Amino acid sequence: MTDSADVCVVGAGAGGAVLAAELAEGGARVTLLEQGPAHDPDGFTARPPEMMAKLYRDAGQTATLGSPPILLPVGRGLGGTTLVNSGTCFRTPAHVLERWAREFALDLDEASLAPCFERVESALSVAEVAPDLAGENAAVARRGAERLGWSHGYLRRNARGCVGSGVCAFGCPTSAKQHTGITYIPRARAAGARIVTGADVKRVIVRSGRAVGVEAHVAGRGSVEVRAPVVALACGTIHTPVLLDRSRVPDPSGERGRNLSLHPATAAFALMDDVVDMARGVPQSFFVDEFAREGVMLEGVAGPPAYAAMALPLTGERHDAAMANYRHLAQFGLMVSDQSRGRVRTVGRHPVIRYDLCAADLARFRAGLGRLRELFEAAGAREVYLPLPAGVEPEHAQPGDLKLMAFHPLGTARADGRPGHGVTDGRLAVRGVRGLYLADGSVVPSALGVNPQLTIMALATRLADTLLDRSGTPSAPGARAGTVALANGHLNTKEVLCPS
Ligand SMILES: Cc1cc2nc3c(=O)[nH]c(=O)nc-3n(C[C@H](O)[C@H](O)[C@H](O)COP(=O)(O)OP(=O)(O)OC[C@H]3O[C@@H](n4cnc5c(N)ncnc54)[C@H](O)[C@@H]3O)c2cc1C
Image (cartoon, rainbow, N blue to C red; front, side, top):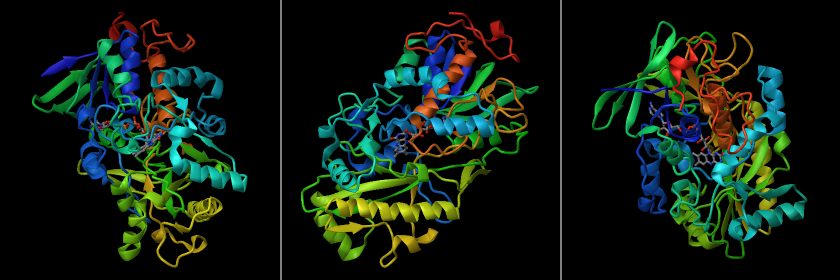
């Protein structure tokens, strides 16, 4: 079977869904191919083990090789990882944009990106969590931060009508979380985009140095070719470089798969005198950014008993005793804005991820774990359970002692405006092939220090503007109808995008 479109977008997560909707509303004929299914929220049982198996790639068991190994779960389906994320929304910090302009010659600053962020925030109904919805787990951290005089606040989130079900990472049972599967995907569909689920894209078809479409295996239909003069990959930071490798797309920079940053994270528990009921309220509702400039951000994390049982850094009788006191347990996390860099390689057809924690990041974890203990002690904790082997103090922790997870992989096809550098250029076009663009976490040049979904979505919005030649038009909410023409000098606009 063959299909044709003006633009073929691959992957329906943070980047792909936004790009597809913006392009379709701008008048382009869009086909969006997503490997996973359209998940039905009626099947969201709020039971972590069940939902992990359903909503995450490989049941959430993706991990890095290295010291230490790090669990790196990603979502799969309409909404991608936004379906299972915590809903925290940060714009790209100004100092990060300044660094990108300085080091990677990227033409991005707060003012020029602000209209893209406004558009995304309005689409996702982003608002600050109300203290009563934040729950007692946040109140514990707030008490500690206030007593210590540390900078803190309630997080901004994309959840409309949230009732604090406490299981954001396992599929929101009330569909309050405004993931891209229920925001941008319906918009894309309404604007005429063809959305195909169960579509595993095998390769990008490149002829004479130009992307001309993709080849996919679609469940129930077999092999399908989508012909399109513009192809945009948004398979996520781990899978986009693999698809580029599999398609034998040239890599003149030699950087593909490299520069992987992760925001490695860990969390501590505390036993409190009062009932906390950590799963009542928003799990990630509060932050402490006192040490953000040092690369350590503290953010809330929590979940129901089945989750706590997996996450508690205890074994045997101590684990039993702590779980028997589940209602009195509080939890808080820490995330490191990493300097370590890993690499994604393609082995067979699959990614193998290598990442080793560098000495500077180990020092950040040591300091951060000490801070987490201080926070809980200041809040009145009876006991603090750090994620370290018994008898190991934070200041002596070695990489192998740390129990890390990561949720924010970025950078494996880094955007770089300097000639000869970067897998993608400053406009997110893949170097070495015409008509091929990237619109996901892979293009984000460095760790952000904050959660990345809004950055990825704002960059996808900007890419849509570039492709629709709306670059001269302010990208304000409602400013949808632009001239439908490609701003890409390589491509003959009229040939490529049909005016609506
Ligand atoms: C538990 C958890 C909590 C998080 N919490 C937050 C948070 O609170 N705030 C925040 O900002 N970020 C959070 N994140 C991270 C955020 O959700 C991701 O950074 C973001 O979704 C990445 O967007 P993306 O477009 O790069 O990829 P994804 O959203 O992962 O989308 C990629 C899509 O491409 C599809 N795909 C892959 N390969 C193919 C192929 N060959 N063919 C077709 N389709 C393919 C995948 O199935 C997937 O649906 C969290 C992540 C996790 C795991």
